[in-house]
Image 1 (tube, helix red, strand yellow):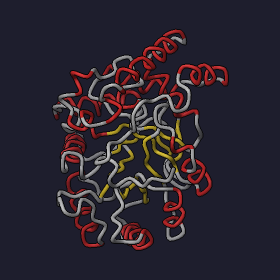
Image 2 (cartoon, helix red, strand yellow):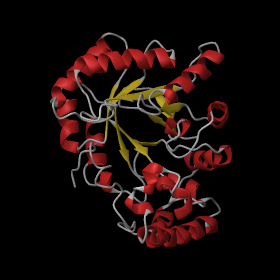
Image 3 (cartoon, one colour):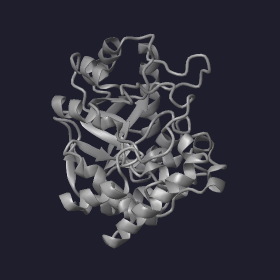
Amino acid sequence: MKQRKLGQNGPTVSAIGYGAMSFTDFYGPADDAESARVLDTCLELGITHLDTSNAYGMGRSETVIGDWLRARGGETPFTIATKVGITRDPEHRFNNAPEHLTQELDDSLKRLGVEAIDLYYLHRRDLRHEIEEVTETMAGFVKAGKIKAIGYSEIAPSSLRRAHAVHAIAAVQSEYSLSTRSPELGLIQTCADIGASLVAFSPVGRSLLTDRPHSLAAVQDMPFLKGNPRFMEPHLSANHSYNANFCALAADMGMSAATLALAWVLHQGPEVIAIPGTRSIAHLKELAAGGEMDLSQEDIARIEVVLPVGWAHGDRYSAAQWVGPERYC
């Protein structure tokens, strides 16, 4: 497994981490015992970075990880990142107030059972609070020894520079894959400029870059994808057609589509780390294999032929799903 720095001055972690949203019912029913087996397998595969959030199952994902750690006697073999800022309040879906961030951090520490969180992200911006103010609050957590580094999720390059002027930002989390390439329009470059990692979530396009893309029937049991433009007709059928060509290419190159998709993401720069999520041990092994691959320029050119920039049909979010992420291109 390739290794990369998590931020300019952060720890060295596996280039492929694990996105623990899959420990909740977001993509269908989850089983805690199965989630524990996934964590066991992560260790076996050399995956050393876990990414979760207090919003994933309203604390369930953090609890699963904390229970697993406690079962091992509290030993923490992973670098752990979690997030804060999304709430249950229908009137204010995001809250960046200092008192809210402080309480939620304490709750996350208890669920995880750790003394300090390695990387603490602001999950979504609350525009009632300037980013400089929020960064000052997060910097206070670093000084207090409750977190080791600060991250932001789904923010614009301009916001990243404003935050970094207040305190070093170790990582920015953004959707990035062969189907979502907007980070190439300024975000990757800004991360490289300030020494932050770009942590790519959904690096296999929520299944569209795998050998087993979700069918229209399967999506009906997944509330988020059911309302996502790329998984609604006529877009889904068009995306399946591109997927078939990508799968054929991957097979010709001697690997699964998921493996090739992860290898492509990591090829985009030394500051890029990927955090795929899955409940399947077999699929997890395919994903981890992407962290072993080196692609040539010829390989990249072949990929670009079957999946040219802009191939994906439909926006990556619906109008409702776009509430929160900062648009910058």
